[in-house]
Image 1 (spheres, rainbow, N blue to C red):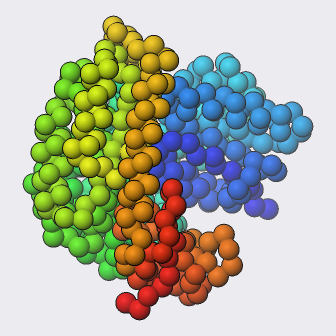
Image 2 (cartoon, rainbow, N blue to C red):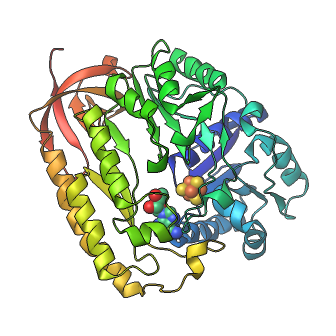
Length: 436
Ligand code: 5AD
Ligand code: SF4
């Protein structure tokens, strides 16, 4: 009989990708996906360690799952991902209901780990080794992923921004060979994928066979069936001419780019070890927008980094005005164990962080609302990848990643269609089909 597997995913798109691959890895053992932990034979929490809040969520979820187990559900409870990597031993001590803990570089070994967890129930199996063997070579081929899919091309990070846990949880940079990526792209296209997002923690550091990300994008765009290409998350210091060239003339590369800057203050950027200053970023944004006039830029910001004064924060607000982002994500600085910034002088009091975050988010809300509003009346291609909440409605993505609700026949599911935007909301658009 089929066994039921529920994976709950936290954090970034790489984690979402990893979760999809975990289903692939466990399918041969008879595990089928289920969207609830109730009645599941195995539950995996695929966790995120990026900020304290993200990590704490895991322990509250483990508390809820403990009750399911106490009620007699014979479930294997596993914790994977970045909290597992960073706090493996601690999880097993604090949450003895957990049967298995494994890191982001161990999930290709899940079949043997699960077998051990089944044998040694209650003992707590731990695998957070980061071995040099490339995980990707050992994963089974990915199953169908739908019209818009992710593909990991690069993993880990060697940059060591002083606030960031990624180099510790994901390890050193690794680039998948181009041929592997293109083979996976081809298989996904053959199962109906039209849009591919190339993923990596430092994705534009990707290089292989003398080629950089710009060259790879062109090759992926040339895979039959692929209509759209995106990449995330990129770092300003690795945007080279080849990549800017791809934005200029590869029509399938979508005009939306998430390019985090984190702060507008040179002093703070230096303390963050970002490897660029605010002017470098201004120039880069200008070059990208000159290459592709309709390019929409988004960013991440951290407020209350150690040493951040009101003037530094003001420099961030100024940079936002100058660059013209369409939206951004913003966070209070969260000191992470083992990182340089956690022990820096000048930690900013919680209430100052909260006050700056509120001001920043109020500004960003206006910017995003205006941008969505500016879409009204425009015609754009939408890739339909989900059914809408109402009957006869499909949900798709604009070239700029905005969700678009459209009344459309089911037959359009999985394909691109021209849509006129009629309404804007805070986080979505609504439109109608128009003849191409
Ligand atoms: N505190 C707050 N925000 C952080 N980020 C990464 N590390 C931290 C931290 N320690 C934010 C950055 C990054 C995004 C994914 O999370 O803005 O771009
Ligand atoms: Fe979170 Fe970073 Fe791990 Fe992604 S790589 S899950 S953002 S800690």
